[in-house]
Amino acid sequence: IPSILDVDVKGKRLLVRADLNVPMEDGRVTDATRITRFADGMKPLLARGARLVIITHFGRPKPNVMDPAYSVDKLRPALAEALDVPVRFSDTCATDAAVILSESLKDGQALLCENLRYNPGETANDPGFAAALARLGDLYVNDAFSCAHRAHASTEGVAHLMPAYAGPLLLEEIDALTAALEAPKKPAVAIVGGSKVSTKIAVLKNLVGKLDHVIIGGGMANTFLFAQGAPMGRSLHEADQVDTVREITQLAAQSGCRIHLPVDVVAAWDFAPHARNTVVAGDACPEDAMILDAGPKALAEFQSVLADCATILWNGPLGAFEMKPFDQSTMLLAQTAADLTREGHAVSVAGGGDTVAALNAAHVADDFTYVSTAGGAFLEWLEGRTLPGIAALERAAKAA
Ligand code: 3PG
Image (cartoon, rainbow, N blue to C red; front, side, top):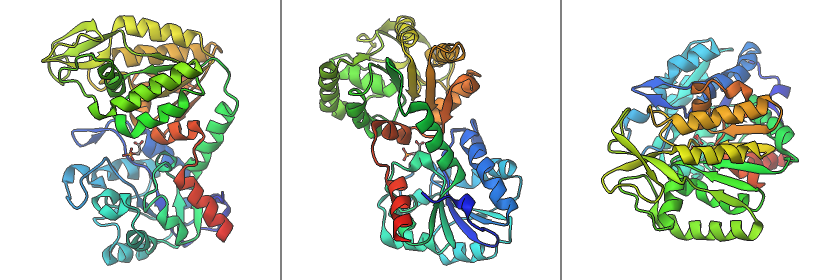
C-alpha cells in the first residue's frame, strides 16, 4: 500500500483519519498513547509543509445527538502538545464551514474536526457523507490501523474518492505485527477481555482454531460463565451471545484449544473504587453484586498458562482495571507476561486502548515485544481477515 511518506506533501491538505479514541476520566486524557504515537508519525509531515485536517471518532455516541461528553474538542490540548503545534478546531466535520477552515490552513498547521460519529453517515459508510469528507483534503491518509476493521465512511468510503495513502503509524503497526507474529511460536495463548463483548466475540470462533489456549476475562468471561448457567447478579454480560459462546466452546474442543475462564472472581456491591467486595467462585456471584475482576485462584491458573507459552497475545483487561482494587489481576498478569518476555521465554504482543492503558499503569508496556494501538482490529488481523480499511487502500492504489 502506498505510503504518504513517499509523497511531496508541501502545501497539500492531508485529510488524516486518526484514532484518537483514548481513555478519559473527568474530561482528562488518562492514557495518551494513541495520541502520542499518531503525533510522532505526523510531525515529520508537518515539518515538510503538510496541512493536517485530522478526523477521528471518540466513543460510540448516538448519531445526531451532539452529546458534549463525546466532543473531541477536549482532546485538543493533548494533541497540540504531542504535535508541538497549535491545533485549530472545527465543530463540524462535513460542512462548508469545515471546508473553509481546512482551506485557511497554512503549511505546517493542523485542524481537528468534531467527532465523526455524531453523523449517522459515518458508521453507515454513506457515500454522501464520504463525499463531504473528501472535500476537506487534497489527499487522504489512513493512519488509524485500530479502526481498519470498520468499513466506515472515514476508513473505507472516502478512500475511493481521492488519492489515498497509508499513514506512518498504520504502516508501523502492520510491519511490527507481521514481524512478531508471522510465524508465531507454539504454544500460543491469547488473553481476551474487556467490555466490548458482542463486537469481539465472533473473532474467537477463528482464533480458537489457531491457538493452544485462550484466557477469557472481563465482560467476555461473564458472558461465557452466564452461558454455563452461572448467576450474574448485576455483572456486565451479554445474554444474547449464549449461542455464540456454545459454538466457540465446541470449536475449541474440536481443535484442542483450551479455554480458561476465571474459577473465582471478585464481586463488588458498587461500580466504584474501593467498593465493598468479596471473592467468590466464578459461578457464585451474589444476586445484588457484580463481577469486577478475576480472583486469586484464576490469576494463578492464568499465570501458569502464560509460563508454558512461547507466544502471548493480549487484548482487553481482565477486570475494571481503571478502579482500585479491581485492577489487581490485570496488573499482576501483565507483570507475568512482561517478566516472561524480558527473560526471553515468550514473544508478547498486546493491543487496544484499555489494554495499553493497563500496561502503562503497570509500568510494563516497554517490556512487551510490541504494543499495538489496535484492539478489535488487532484481533481481526490475527484471524487473518482482510481489514476493510486496508483493502480500501489497496484497491485505491490499483485503481490509480
Ligand atoms: C478501538 O478503540 O478499538 C477503536 O477506536 C475502534 O472503536 P470501536 O470499537 O467503537 O469501533
